[in-house]
Image 1 (cartoon, helix red, strand yellow):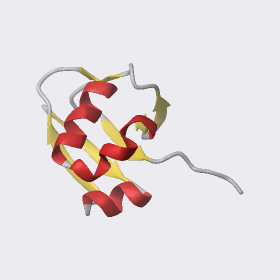
Image 2 (tube, helix red, strand yellow; image 1 turned 45 degrees about the vertical axis):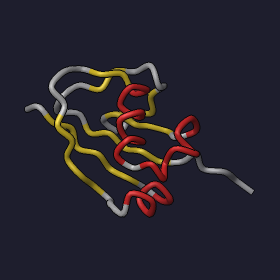
Image 3 (cartoon, one colour; image 1 turned 120 degrees about the vertical axis):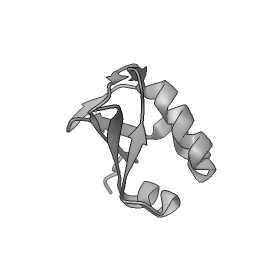
Image 4 (cartoon, helix red, strand yellow; image 1 turned 90 degrees about the vertical axis):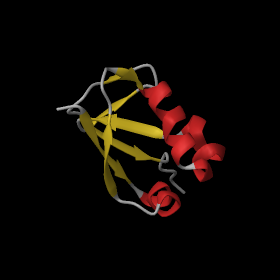
Length: 82
């Protein structure tokens, strides 16, 4: 398998106009590198790129984590309490 399943939540889903899509990737890549590609595809996400949270296979990860083909990647903004 040379793709990942990407899930979008809340404002990220609104800005991408997608809840889920498949991305082709051919080799492992860091979350930060992939987020740069995400912003290239969806420029409206640029203002929030640094604060986007990512989960890989349902585990929250840092931006230096590695995404590999076959992974499920969820993208969302941090939740704030009030």
